[in-house]
Amino acid sequence: MERYAGALEEVADGARQQERHYQLLSALQSLVKELPSSFQQRLSYTTLSDLALALLDGTVFEIVQGLLEIQHLTEKSLYNQRLRLQNEHRVLRQALRQKHQEAQQACRPHNLPVLQAAQQQELQAVEHRIREEQRAMDRKIVLELDRKVADQQSTLEKAGVAGFYVTTNPQELMLQMNLLELIRKLQQRGCQAGKAALGLGGPWQPPAAQYDQEGSPVPP
Image (tube, rainbow, N blue to C red; front, side, top):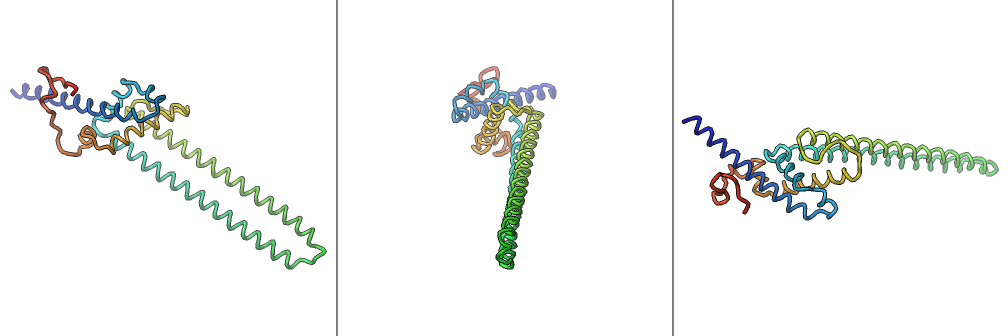
């Protein structure tokens, strides 16, 4: 008797999983229509079905949310670093201008051309240093963001999310960005399947009218 009850529970669990998968897939197919046609063509039924399977237990939603939070913190930190560097350069320029003005005021007229020539060289050297530091900061930002993207790709690939692997191909990156946007919109939409996968809204109950006699879900 217990074995029979266990078998029935397994069948019921399988049916619930199938219905959740169907709801997620339907929601993804609806969201894909909002993307440019070039990306719609690349997101096949199989890809969306595999993505829906990965979203079933809600873990991927949590992973994506965590990755986005890390990304935002990283971007904020990098932005603040560049802002601090810009402020340092502004202070440096102001101090240099003041230094030059004071030197010119104290300089004898016949020595002024020589002083101005030396100050121009100093100004050019400082501006060169500023440009190099800005370029170095920009390179650092690009490298750090590239590393974060690779970390995201690797994490989502290990989580079994369709379409994700480590790549720098611009077209593949854009496709992955669109997949992330689908996941984010699905989570925000709060559809019934998304809530069930996230454990929101209480236990899911499959409507009997959507099942045939063999217990398989029937699309509405």
